[in-house]
Structure formats: structure tokens, C-alpha cells
Image 1: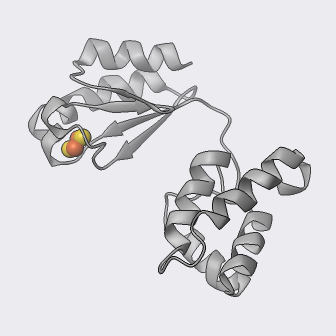
Image 2: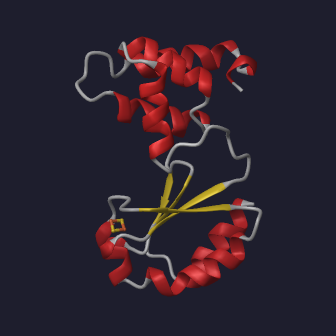
Image 3: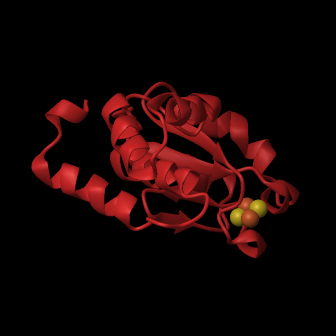
Length: 148
Ligand code: FES
């Protein structure tokens, strides 16, 4: 929860919001950055963002609850993002999904994303900030198992 965040986290949040200050349509980019940095957009983060953007807390919360990308609490499990957009589909990602889901089980968050920007080298996945390209099923399963 926000109340329990370290002071450095508070400064990170303020810095992150400030990076988008004055930008038109800043709400979604800020929410994505907060989700990525903290693993969630909790109530206190919503309040801080609302204050910075001169929005009501309800407006921010409405956007947060509308998109599945944002979660109110951090999930402590490791996260593997698997691209299932068109180019990766054309390169066979869908056939790998059952094995990936089995490898993830309940220990790893397996998230679908739509394009990681490496379309010509798919199927692709991301763990943290690291992109993994040209995955076959065995490599994807190993990646997920290694993320545990
Ligand atoms: S479609 Fe998968 S990286 Fe672009």
C-alpha cells in the first residue's frame, strides 16, 4: 500500500508524474508508468495523480478500473509478458500458449501483450525490461521456468 512505501518510492512517483506534466492526455501514460514502476496503481497513487492533473479522484479511478492493465494491488509473482499480436501470431505464438500456461501455473503471471516492437523476430516475450526474441516452445517454457 502507498502508506507503506519508502520515501524513495514517493519521490519516484512524484518524479514520474512530473515527467508528463503539461502533456496533453497525460493520464494514461502516467498510469502505465506507475503500473510498470510499482506493479499497481493503488488508491493513494490515484489521489496523487488526480491532484497533479487537476482531475477528481473518481475520474482517475474510473480510468484505472476500466482498463485491465491496471491493478489496485501489486502481484508479487514474477511476470512474463507474451506478445500475441498479429506478427507473433503469424510466427506461431498461439500454438505455444498451452505449454506456456502450464509452465506458468500459479507461480508466474503470464500476461498477454500486443506488440513488443520486435515484430520481425517473433514470437517474443518480455521479462522485466529484457526482451526475448525468436522463441520456440522450449525456449519460452525455459524462460517462464527461469522466471520463478
Ligand atoms: S507483433 Fe509481436 S512484437 Fe510486434
